[in-house]
Image (tube, rainbow, N blue to C red):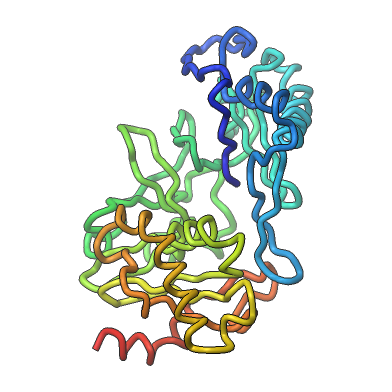
Length: 331
């Protein structure tokens, strides 16, 4: 879910760090007060584009500033009632719920309470699990997790770490899920340590492509950028591929069927997509960039293999389908 962009006349955001759980958010300007100001002046302007899978494929729907404000306040109201019996002050917790996804983001000042579980029977702390996108994750005692670096041969530039749950952790799942080599549970969730003890979520392990020369490519970021740049009028769906290749490639399903009627229309679509994604790719590592229009493959809508449950595109299957074409491109 994308964050709203407060207007220029919205109150400035001030970062305040305090440990007193009785903090009142009305005392200072926050992203929430900025959102409220914009919702008051431009209630029907688009605040975010909500991603979801429709019957016709992957889509973004507009959420207005007013609706976004209502969603936040209703979620915060729920958690306020949950936390008030435990001496957390009103307005000290903000929540954002993604509709139909059963995912709730908690923003608050009492991280020890809302983030981690304590085994002691007298404890009033609750497990809510972690979920860090724009915010950094900071482990707190008595959490029992490990951040294990990935092998250097596949992690030369990003220095990614994986969240691993050891057997002694109270959050250790069923033993059938443990890794056969070390007996631990490898979540597959990757993080980057941005400062000492603070980690930014960098997606799932299968969101990263293992490239030539033992480098990794952030495939998910490439796909997200392409949809943000071209999802409204050019692209229906996109998947990044390129395992073992010197650079990445994308396979796209076009928004409109007529672009496949002729080679000229298909090439025009490829050029438009390349032009829009180029600013993003200029900021990527060399092996992640798509700089050749021939590395943008166009297929009809819905032919790409998808999962039965969520309808997500199966990246490895697409890799197999396009192996010959990639061999020809990089021979």
